[in-house]
Image (cartoon, rainbow, N blue to C red; front, side, top):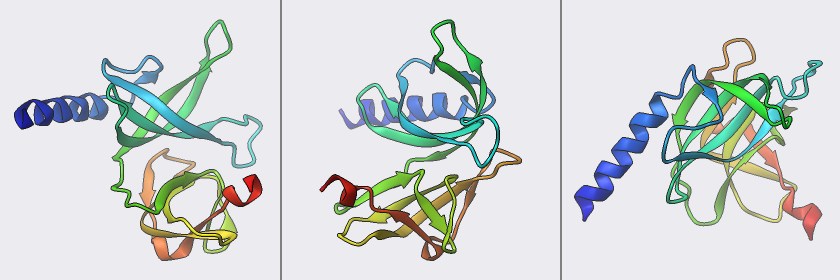
Length: 158
């Protein structure tokens, strides 16, 4: 059984690596988008760049990818070209992946994605894993998590 699971994980990882430079959707067999966010960064195009979660057919997160917009289909759904991909971080209990409402060095930056520790605080500190989508290259650049925090949107829901 473990060999089958290992084979499946390796097959998904191989498909995921092949995504860089490809137009999505559609995603390769067994992979799908599991959420994401637009990164406008003050441009005229509100979704010029994006960051998304890549999931396998079993619903397990396998990667975080960056993309640049590449038009829309006949129904208005966007296409993107994948510009970079990193493995999905290990997320411990009491933590979650956050994007779109983060700061780097106390400056709001919607291109930041980070693992944050859950709490009742207004700003959640990043722990162990933080990246930023570089606006020029589209690459996911590793950040110092000690300089990253994300707005606690759960406080608004209470």
